[in-house]
Length: 135
Length: 385
Image (tube, rainbow over all chains, first blue to last red; front, side, top):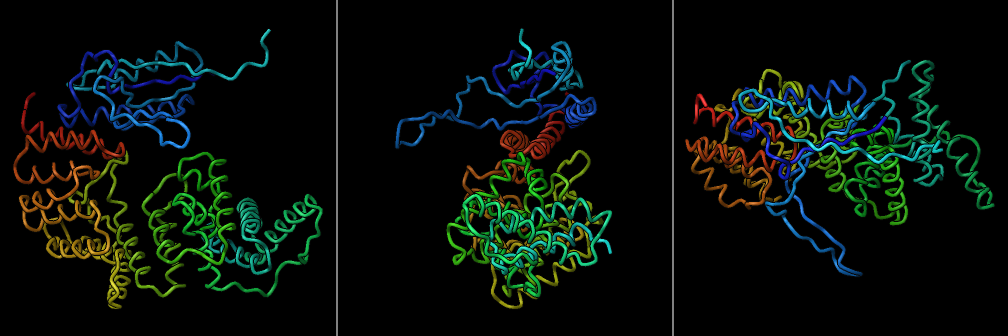
């Protein structure tokens, strides 16, 4: 079964239709959102499609090698313009269509006014192990 | 007789010490004990032995001999050990203590010392430890065998001291719970065992600290593992027996008049445990204990927690003044600032700070908690929006 990464961005994705920041929602709307996310993960565990889910801190730096015997060079924190990943869910599904369907469900998480956020998510197929039969 | 998993684990350090006394090297003996433990876990439920310790020693000793023989034949050497199981060697509390020191060897990293302690002293399997720390089992197995090589290389003559052991146990306790093993309960069991074999007041202080915090565990999280702050906790859920035990242990330790960091922390926990609600808490005395704690550990986190206590004892403005001296980069500083500004009536600023605290939160439970706080204030500030 193919695996897919559903990527959520702090920055860099096209703007959501319902993009009011979370701290401006009512407490009930915050609750509803948190419950939706937790329920979806539980449901995908139930269908045998859930692999992993992680959230990332917005902090981070660029790092690169700077030659023998020298400490690595760091650059950061990230500039405001940088595309910034917020977290991901990894799913293992039968088809590409199913991956798109689930990403759509995740994007429907409720936000301000209890309405779906319509958040843009990035769907990325994993490169797989080579098959045994190739001819 | 039936033997519970915990009773089984209690035998592990004794069995390991018995093998080492018999002449086995620590690293190989520890692998052999783990093998015997895994076999015990799978067979004892249907067919428990009459003498569990004897069974474990025999099986572990055989596993050790097998391993030593194959190693010897690989190197074309003779095995110099008797084939019979070690008998009559009754390991003592000193042996267990020595194991604690070995596993908390100063040359080990914290992660390695934690893993080795949980396996060699705690009797957990590599798989359980791996699950608890959310790492692959192979990674955990490698971490443990590297730790044993480090301990072996650095010489068993220079083991860790009781302070490093306490730090390792504290780390295990603080990791809390994940997987099928309750690490907090395991840390308490290991600290109890340590307290019974070494006469150091600070170890009793650590045990008291753990008991007093563990007593609150049922009230600390709500449904969905959400954080319930101290002020909102249902204190009827606190475990009064554990609190009473913690207080007795703490008082005995304090009476010996050799105050240390863990005793000061336990004293603060005891004062919270003693109060029926936040308002009823003896905050001035808590501030005094934070001042004591600062003399042992002057860290930004202690100063941050002290600012919260000052805010309760002397009012929000005094709390904010105490907070001003805390390093800006300290984790959770925004959350404390938000709380104090809310207490001071500046809801706009508090709401912004709660949102910032959510942004910088180190885990999702805390992010959600701070986000709820921001949303709560924003609803008060802009109703009907």
